[in-house]
View (tube, rainbow, N blue to C red):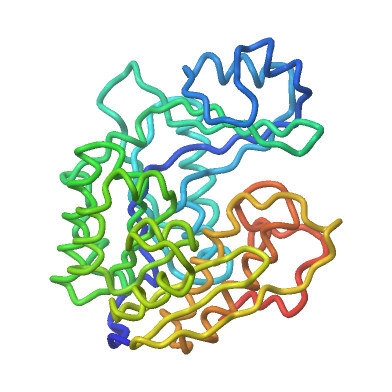
Length: 342
């Protein structure tokens, strides 16, 4: 394992295609009325999102993998910062206020386009528990290399890079720029896979950056298989071992594997009653947050993986990908063996 830098202010600094997450429970008829196809990701306008939500009481939280990761760290006592773009609108103001109140260092980067919106991701859950997505792209997709704060990156033990930034040419350039800055400043680079489709569409360049700059890789089994072009679990594990990277590969109820120095160890999933599972959104992000915060705090790879499993178990017991710990604490049962601090 590369030596964890000690003379750094932040445990994690995340570069992310930030958004607001909006969660709503509604019947099938509500989707039909707004022309949204059930069970799919629908690309829609901000007005369509507003129309679907109108008259309801949705759950709204800051979103994106990077925002979820730094929320997990900051709300459990760590030092975290976020780099991402919003618009000067109600959702952007909400995002800024909420993440700052959660103890995350965030200086808003405002879109220069007055006509754009803060990116919004609406998740509608129908009575059969199926989730339908409505995605309204906006300012979060505009992040560019000139938006990357070099001083923040230089102060980070770990710089976390969100793969959704690969959806735009400017975002790709921002990821490469931040990775180079992190290496120059002696910090570690964590490359998040996040989405097998995004990784697959950019596989050669994504793999090249992973091998040249990443110290840490985080994702699920399908995402790792896409990155390395493998077909079976054994082939995927062999590829991760051969890369000689620190990595965490989640596998849902089957737990996770963590990797270091060409070796692997299994981390079992925490046992939890099925009726306590409310929402799995953000479980992978919180596993990654717990894993990386554990590493930043000096834990072994295996103990960091166990912390990731604890944090993931916590998040699935309520709606939303933002932890209800620290400043967001509520009087509710938590996962067994949950550790709020490293």
